[in-house]
View 1 (cartoon, protein in one colour):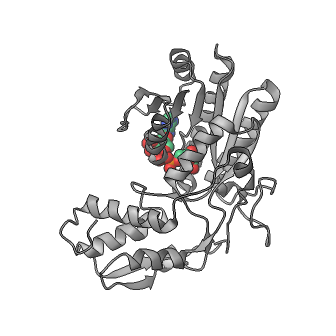
View 2 (cartoon, protein in one colour):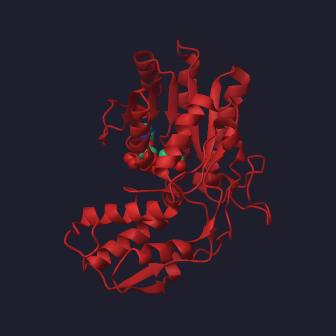
Length: 320
Ligand code: A2R
């Protein structure tokens, strides 16, 4: 398989490059001029706002599969910069779809990456969420991803293009930005161990239940969807078993010898926190055989190990 990852310099991109290379694919990946791809593959510079550049790249690479990961992926930024978010996530995605439609190679598959956030304000009792559940996005980022998916479905129907769509739920792992909860907790613990902060963890709502999958499982799902997913379908990608954020905190704390107290931070509480978000993942299991294999405990342990290493916590009693 010759694969092209658009948006390969991000958190998921690095893991996807590794997953595809290990599976024997020829891997090409793009990054913005300001970025660098660290994993071994053929890298290309691309801004998806330049439609002609995408066409030129598709002619040059002629991939069998495109994984479209490029995005403005921050919910917080999407509130501050809605136009930028819509430009990249909607217009940029249309640029990718148009370039693929016009490409000489007609049998390329496109895997479009969306988010579980597209479900938004879910009905009480709707969990586990099947892919047929109505979408009611609760923020600008989620709305642009729902739009990306709707437009992708139109390209599938109108132009008979080979497109598989994904709604990925929370994923985490070593190297993730600390704006996400697992990475945030692990960073705080590593900083406390290092003596960089008081032994007090700042946390938000601990009763919310969310579904977490290791990023290494997520990229395996993307590869399997490229290989076995049914064209035109949208797939939830997640563990299918939500846990309380309290459980994540307890697990992370149990991995440290440090004496740490927990403090609820009003700034981290969200008024509209939905009590439980949990996907039904039977469709991806039926079509590809995929299910999450890495335990959440492992993900948390590896993420904590990554932060300790990054902060130079060698010589602690914690032995990572
Ligand atoms: O925003 P940056 O500088 O971190 O660059 C991101 C890049 N990107 C673009 N690439 C090409 N043309 C653009 N106009 C453009 N704008 C942004 O896409 C970043 O390197 C990459 C997306 O990676 P992350 O933000 O790290 O997202 P992650 O966690 O890898 O998620 C992959 C996909 C995204 O579509 C998410 O929305 C979805 O999974 O959940």
